[in-house]
Amino acid sequence: MVGALDRLARLASLHLRQRRADGRSLLGDPGAAQAMAALTAEAAAARAVLAAATGAAGRGEAAFAIACAKQRASAAALRGAALAERLFGAAGLAPDLPLGPLVRRLRSWQAEFGGEAAWAGWIGAAARAAGPEGLWPLLTDGGKMPARGSTPKGNAP
Image 1 (cartoon, rainbow, N blue to C red):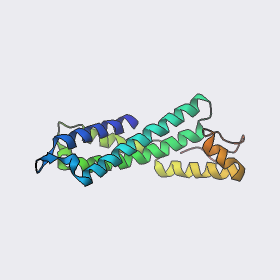
Image 2 (tube, one colour):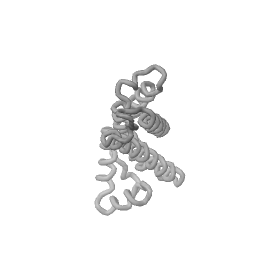
Image 3 (cartoon, helix red, strand yellow):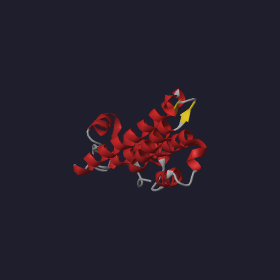
């Protein structure tokens, strides 16, 4: 998902710089610039949670960090796809642009293995299971679950 979001952001930036309206780049339009910034932020957020989950996995404490990464990357995929479609408008339907396949794959990937809401529920259950004393370490200690058996009931989505 991270690679597809990065690719969408690059394609959208190039598209906005090349397209002209009233003799100036579409990137000069405040609405387009704001949407482009939001798309870039979604790609950066997905990249950041991936890095955090990868680091936690290297320490063997990955369950919570991976759940957070999947939830946030799923949210970024949906928002990023919608923003890219808005930025490209009808031009996104052109057969020579890879926008369509990227958007379809992002929407598909975000739903695989549980979507944004399913993982948010698991994260909330993990936070409740950690209890008042374990919540802060859970959030700040790389996703380390505070005690054996404190994971939420049931499997992750």
